[in-house]
Length: 124
Image 1 (cartoon, one colour):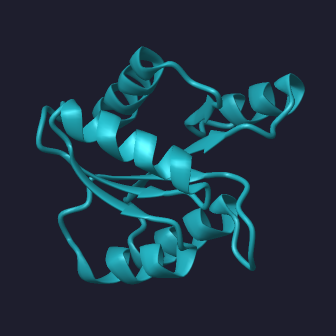
Image 2 (cartoon, one colour):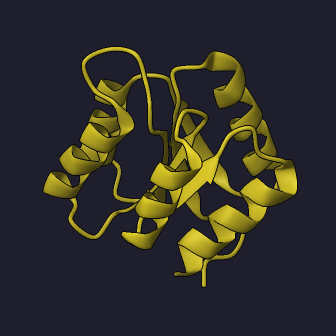
Image 3 (tube, one colour):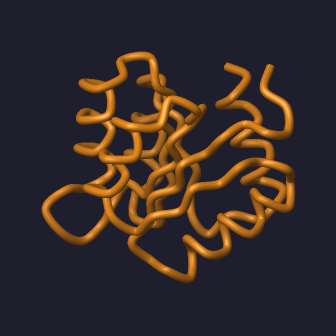
């Protein structure tokens, strides 16, 4: 089980959400690397072997969404843990994603929900 000190790469194109996640997870004792760019996230994953979890938004503007980012990450590091946050998935789609074994947290989340979600993904 991962305790405080685990390193989490956060990827979200919404700067306000990225800042909230970064501050909250850092206050919980995690080492946090924030970025709003999927391309930058890939570069970080390729060069930083200390990352324990990538927490990415599922829907992002640009050429690469969270799902595509996850696929590219797993090409580089097949065992890398990736979890998703989203504000755009309907309940039926969310249930389907969860049943398929993906870790997905709906936005808006409460701080205690994010804390439990990250702990569960890191320890699972």
